Image 1 (tube, rainbow, N blue to C red):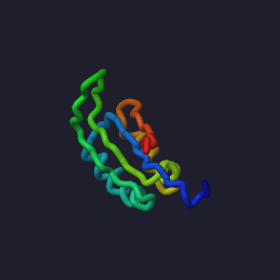
Image 2 (image 1 turned 60 degrees about the vertical axis):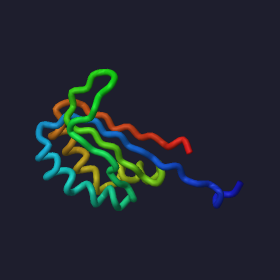
Image 3 (image 1 turned 90 degrees about the horizontal axis):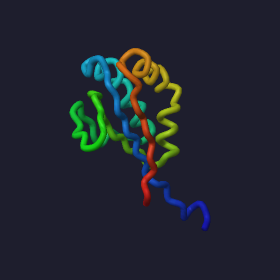
Image 4 (image 1 turned 180 degrees about the vertical axis):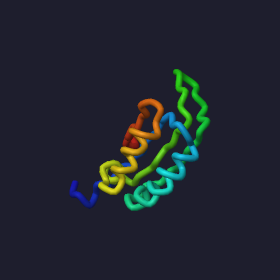
Length: 108
């Protein structure tokens, strides 16, 4: 099989966090991060401050799912030099506790 026959698998990124202010998250983070997300062909396909937790405990106030055409694109977004200041802002100033960012590759 040559490289032309390889098809990249879609990648999904789940984000779970607890922030001090959703308004602050939107104004200081999301407004600037979406153009960087789009640069890597990513999109937020779901997001809510009130996810339905069916198992385990979670007291966060923001959950989202991002979709990218490949894991390579997802990693390029996460490691993008332009994204680093916003990632640091989110982690070091906005989150009340450690959040979770998990990357998954689709099965097909």
